[in-house]
Length: 197
Image 1 (tube, rainbow, N blue to C red):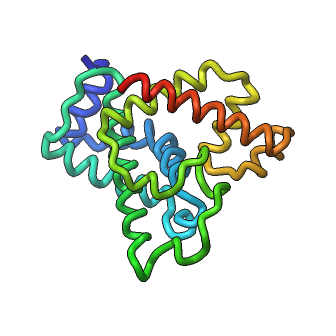
Image 2: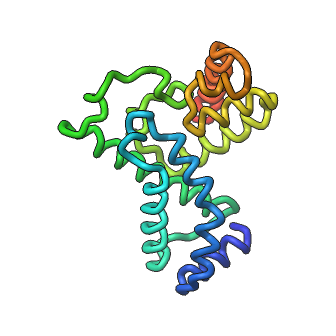
């Protein structure tokens, strides 16, 4: 069962409580912007603003919440729901940006450094279910908790959209160390996720 605070907040939003809507917005907006920003390739970031995506997420969420479409079952469901809506909005933006006349790919060729942890923008277009997204986020959190402070900072900066070169400058290590850290984490995540299937 979800914690009482999340249930109460959603119930108050359904009832039209504007303060509850403001509280819900304030509680998750920064995390959602970071999530959206981390999932946008550098090319798509030129056309799509993470904050605009999150505004759209909240418009959809509040509209559907008013209609009673959401049921919270366990702690964290509210965050996972908002994160899933965000990812879907990003996929829609990526699809829109890939249309023939608007294709971000036509602007320049994709380079590995434009990806987040080596994941190409095209990978954003595959629709994972909310359950798959939840598993991925939980696995990432678990893996990151085992990292040294330096490696955790490398991953966090990369997830925030910084290039490998920028991350290396901030944490004062070589770009190769950044690449190796991300590769190791990616391999560990893949192994864990494949083991969960």
